[in-house]
Length: 196
Ligand code: DGU
Ligand code: CA
Ligand code: CA
Ligand code: CA
Image (cartoon, rainbow, N blue to C red; front, top):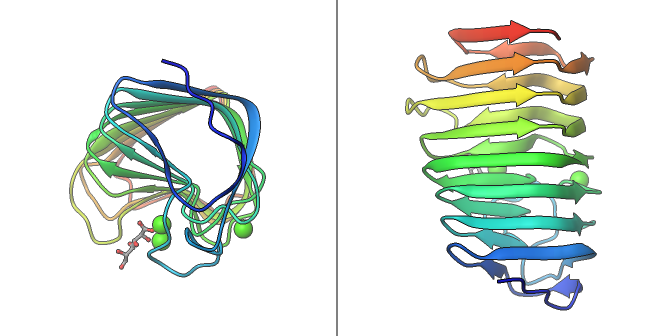
């Protein structure tokens, strides 16, 4: 299924239902005040919610982007451009494999990608710049997250590329260019790197 809703100011979250493909064809979305102001205030709503097996592609999120994109289960995110990061850009809310390929994100105060459930997060061919952390596993959580970063360009992170408090979480970073990222990995016990 391909659904393109009207682009522009969103005052309700757009839901990409289980198994559905949502192709924005390059349309640009921003959050209305009902979703949030894109500040560091918690509890803002996402512009997109992607349910299990859903695909979101070819969309631009502009300022203010509120709580960005939330995923529930397995999700594919392709060519998503965050012109600005709101409270955060994307959150894994429920366990699954989340694959993010292509696109970019910039201008965040703290987290770019927030992981709130045991999951596999695969990011490739993505450019991330100007935030606190490229990826943050929920503070204090001990579930396992497997992160793979391939062919990315990561720059200007105040703190880290991936920060976790879980001794079981892992990261594999390959063929990635990075610059000014603070401490590359914080709290990660299992690190594999090549070609960076
Ligand atoms: O106390 O639960 O920042 O999903 C901390 C909060 C925080 C989350 C997270 C998020 O970890 O709200 O945006
Ligand atoms: Ca937050
Ligand atoms: Ca958030
Ligand atoms: Ca921002």
